[in-house]
Image 1 (cartoon, helix red, strand yellow):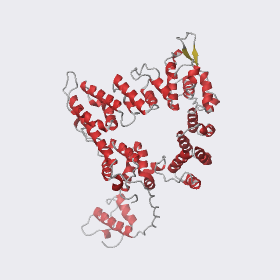
Image 2 (image 1 turned 135 degrees about the vertical axis):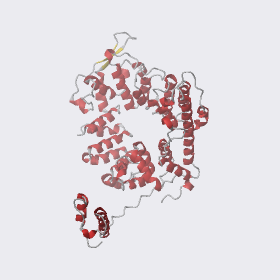
Image 3 (image 1 turned 120 degrees about the horizontal axis):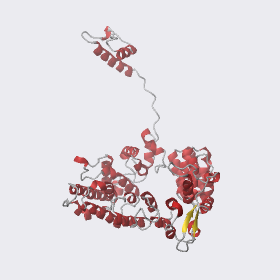
Image 4 (image 1 turned 90 degrees about the vertical axis):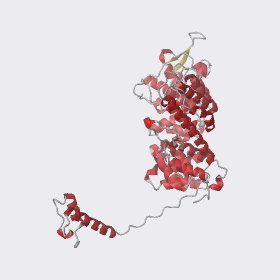
Length: 546
């Protein structure tokens, strides 16, 4: 091809089409049609344009990745991590059956938790895949960021997809010594938000007064969403010394900040706000003794207005759709009142006696629900026990908490062993159909009594001939939460049971697969934990720096 044709003319011919604008004859070889000639000319000019570009100035090289002196996991554990990050899910067979292979994606959180418990650092080569996994799954982020450490935070700055690591309270922040006031001040004023959150927590753990003073230096200029997160960080180690700062925050220009400050103050029984709430609640809830010693009842007179002082103390004046104003205001007053007020207010009774008192005029549910929220907020295990009642009691007729959501929150306030024992008793009395939420707040691995209660209930369901997917949620929890040492005891359940009269067709085969998957998952979890706890971890990890 001889001659040259301006790039713009080629573009115009391509846009209009060679039927409407034929390329000049000088770009066509003999016998060559117009479309082919246009493509040949465009290819030639594209190469010329690229060859003529001047190289751009090279960007500055990033600072080297920070040092992380933690050791890497042992080699077998590193290979296992690669397998888990490959997203190899359990195969699904015909009819939606999951088969007997473990679901590896559900084991990654446990692997990360165990690795962090051992104090390992992430292998450098695994950092991109770890950050990608955390980008997709929010539940992995705290574990991934702690495992990735300062190198993960360094790498996250180089990829916009990983910017989540720079906004949350990252365990990967490189922090100065909490006693180095000059370095602390420098990072507080210039650091990323994640670094500042982590720094505030570190300083608070060393000296709560210093942490509050640090926060006060920039508080007026912080964005509302940042003030909210900084204020929320005061939950850890909350004490009466935080009251003056929180009291000032009740006048913050952000409604969410005011509400959080009020919530934190109500968790301090000796705070002035708690006292004000108690005084208001006392005018709304009282004991009527006219029925005699055995006929006492609780009388409720809900507030008739939500004045400015109540709103400053965190009472929201506008109820959600479907809620009456007075009941909405009453609930907020009671949940913010110290629970220690009620025994004296209601005739010297214990929490167990109080929650069984009849409440006049249909206020029982509202009052008990507010006490439940107060027990959760104030972490009061005694009141939580009273509101939960015995595990064998029907959720519809229990002494206080009627909904499973309320019961789950109350359970979270109990010591680990008591929580597990209560849920085991609930399952023994009511089966698994209503236990999923309650199991979710139990510590992992489940205690022996709780694990046995779950397996026994699954065995009963199998013998009843129902399909296992009715219990797929609980079965999935069992795969993640049962003690791996239970695998051998469950082997007998992997056999296909005889189908009894009235059972669902083929249910026995499904149950056999489900228990085989459960056993294989437990054994895989045991292998994972063994690999992470390998005695040769220090030697297999290699040097601390790459």
